[in-house]
Image (cartoon, rainbow over all chains, first blue to last red; front, side):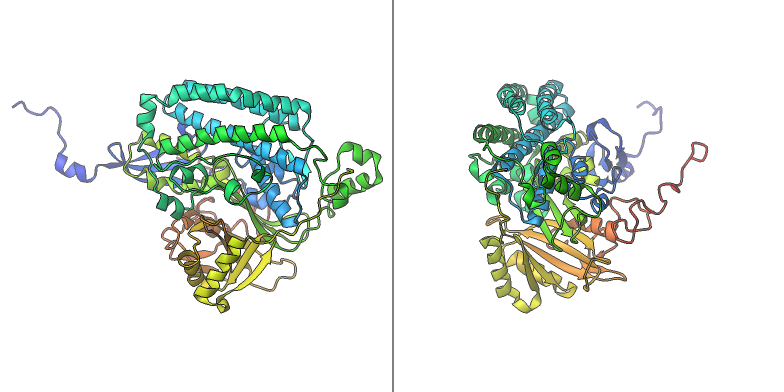
Length: 406
Length: 182
């Protein structure tokens, strides 16, 4: 037996201290945003994962106490910046619940349309990026290409591509015109081709399937105990969707299904998102076909809306109302009370706990951020998986760090 | 603007939410809490001593298996307020009937503390840490109560009403580590 050239480690004792620590992030291409994981690994097997968050904390909730109910819409846009209109719908849904107003039918339909467009946009990024992180670049490009058409809709309806800031208390910034509807129809007619491309690339892709199925399992009991909502909960067999179970806006008018899976793994969450996109497109088609005519904003007698330019410059009531809402120390009169209202966001229940003190500023504007709650589940479901599974599980939970840290 | 103006409608709590309240009253008795209603919300105010009892009854006897949301608020100098300075809210849902109730518990300065609900819903882990981080409310029995969004060395609680919007100079006085020192 030849003499050892190097000092060979004593395998018996080394095994006991074999875990090593890997710092994952805060800047890492596969985290997509700024979050950090400290992984304790045994070889490539994860023994423990400790998330460290807060790198993007920008005090959004503190800002919510210093901006009025219309101004804050620009901040909620920047929480989940993958689907800004859904954040706007959620925020003004809470404000309108507080004020006790019911929107015009046209406005309700418009909010459903922009919310569902946002959901499609969010799911396209999430499913596309899930494929990208696992090495399937082409599917991601097909998905991103369609998101471009959705940005075109935002641009036409509000003038801004990325953060539209489109909703207002009691209405929206501008009414939909024919060009907006044309662009929405372009999204809905292009979608089947994109879905078909993505499904052909991914649904029977051996590598993709092997890396998604059975990875990051979350049982139904755990999903409920850990407060999961949205596609994460529905991927685990929780049959709950606020659009169906506690309908808001015009959702009772539409015929749609809520997909769910029982498996609870990354593949289940991926498939729930893919199917939700098809249902969202169907809702958009129905809403565009049935879009009611009539005013989009509440009448100015309600003293809620910022009136449009024509009303402001051509009528005394409009001018007074504009002055009242725009000048400091005037604005809304709110009840001295508080309310919790939530909508079904792309990632799950997106709610606001609003405390009002009678002025135009919220006393407290607490967000119920789905990303924050889903990321707290991550250390539990990544245990005993391989290092390479981190990106698969992170992608399937759709963590948006701006919403995570606020 | 010629069509009929939609009048403000008075949204009421759903029948499912009222059913939760009835089951809670049967389980712990109506003396344990007091109830207010606003729009479609039902709020159940409890004292910190009764908090766990009421939440356990809601979870096990009234069907609210799901903790939807947990957060805090600071009512320092809130107009007309006489109660405790902080309040923590727990939004609970019944996933079968979609009933929803908000449980509120007040705590006061100094040293605000509440029992943790980690034993009932492990999902409260990070939400309680965030309330601790932002308001300094301690949750007794929480397994890992650390700051979550702010850095560990941060000394204040930023969402308290006596903390200024622009901070107290933490950003400008942040200690920089130069390449030579590292």
